[in-house]
Length: 128
Ligand SMILES: [Zn+2]
Image 1 (tube, rainbow, N blue to C red):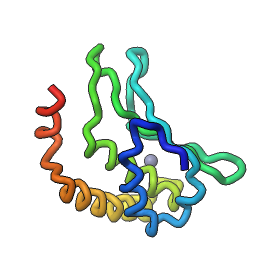
Image 2 (image 1 turned 90 degrees about the horizontal axis):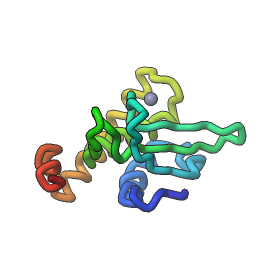
Image 3 (image 1 turned 45 degrees about the horizontal axis):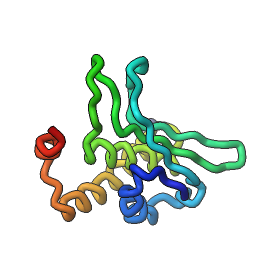
């Protein structure tokens, strides 16, 4: 799997949930997206499915909110990652998708905590 340089820290998160997502081997690439002033953001991630059965995922790392560059928190990014990973098993936003997303999110929150992550608010303090 190819992962953008600025997102390589998520690889250990993916690994920790890979047993829940059998389709993970079909995910070939994860790219980061940097926001643009002329793009209004509705979601933080996207998943593409190719005709050959492979997938590509994109995760936003920042976006513009009224001209102001805003960085997504680590928590935002892993939550989006959980959402998109769950789509590898359930393409639609069905109850099974949400349940799998929640299970993966629980694993990720445990990992964040283990890494000493306190909160988004605390993280924002370190960015400023
Ligand atoms: Zn979705």
